[in-house]
Image (cartoon, rainbow, N blue to C red):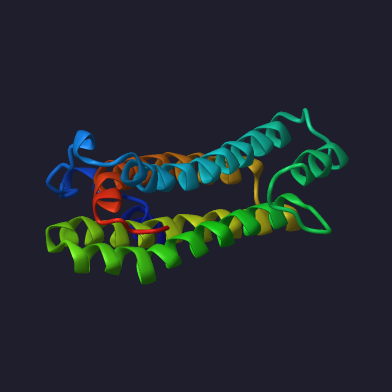
Length: 190
């Protein structure tokens, strides 16, 4: 039963993604293009952090990174805390992605759908994908906590981190493809 539930909550159903009418970039002013490109810039920060999560987990799994070196490497990341552990790092990353998606769900997406109702199906799908990602973030965080407590294997953490990276990559690409043009055209500040 648990496995079935997890499988259901970790799938994006990419084939069911609706598509909005395309915005021709040539019809946008440089400022409008910049507004749309800001979304990708925000996502690039999360892509970078996700790659660092996966790399750190891989190094722990390979035994090539000892705890002090791991703390030192993680402490150089843009998200900082006073006492770094792999579990705290996973929790921080999960929290920041959740905050990003909450801001989109509560502010950005309603503004887009209100100003252009043709985008409502895309916004609805992106919101549903945020729920999938929330499940994956929770699963990664829980696996990190169990690993730190000694009750999980690093392979479980690695599998969850890799799956999250795949889903985030797909989700971000879809969101940028569908919304970068409209954000510029509608002059929405993010």
